[in-house]
Amino acid sequence: MKFHHVGLPTSQKRPGETYLEGAKLYVTDAVAHPHRIEWLRFEAASPMPEILKTSAHIAFEVADLDAAMQGKTVLIPPFVPMPGLKVGFILEDAAPIEFMQFDK
Image (cartoon, rainbow, N blue to C red; front, side, top):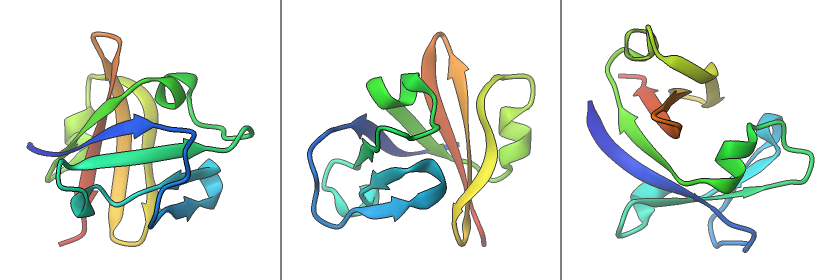
């Protein structure tokens, strides 16, 4: 498991946002930020859990997403937000954590 980014909800439009239609969410590229911050701007009708809309999350890159999530409290089951990336969210000690599996 390797640290990838911190995700912070915002209501402010940011340069370089990518729109994720299924989530009704705009995200920035954490890799492009000097401190590995991913900004998340949710539309009012976003189906994402309220805790992601209001709380920071930390994200880790994992080799096997399904194995990393096994036995955990699942907040969002694995899904593909964009080609080459599969993610899932868990709750640990009431904090949202994102696991990311990149295609090799």
